[in-house]
Length: 261
Image 1 (cartoon, rainbow, N blue to C red):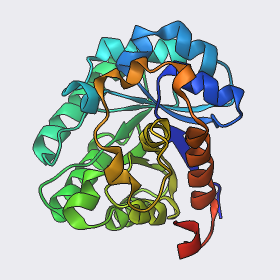
Image 2: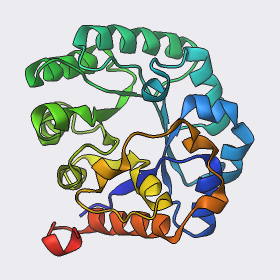
Image 3: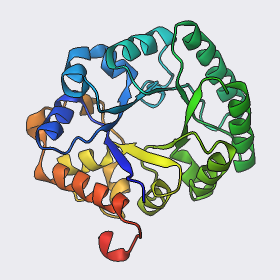
Image 4: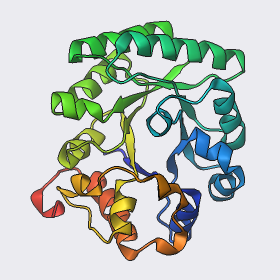
């Protein structure tokens, strides 16, 4: 089984603490607006070779994606492997327009490697969106992203992962965030073509001394606005345990109940 990766989404002061405790890993999803806001903090932790970096457009956090020039600045600072193109939740036409327009603008600025996130009001429409992105962005689409909302709507992300793997098997797939089903996430991250998954949930649970378990995602609630300002001194042993346990789970070839307390 190819090694699967987990990216802890956290402010740079917590990422630094994880690095010092040898739990940071080398697979990261960063938010463009946070990188531009605190460039030296991120560079000091993640600068240099050996890291796979996905630069997110911050649409979930800000309600709309950052503009192309902020993405360009974030790219200049961190040299990510891929930039996430803007998408519009459950809206295929708007996603196609936003992704293609952003790609054209970023291409004109010298950027070449993008992740697209298919959207739609049905599974069929989402597949059609993926196909059109595949055709229209053939020269610069290098990754796929699969949103966590698909588990909420369809019960699993598995079918979309399978479709994307057949549509363009050469493109790696990243799972964007934990869904409401930890079991489905663990199943999907093991699938062929999937490189990894990102989430703040194991960190946020750990900060409240809650162990990561099947029901833990719901316990985490929504990310608070002060999450990015939490000091490194707030990190608990449970944060370390949650990250360690989750990485152990995704590295196993078979999911069995004893590994999901």
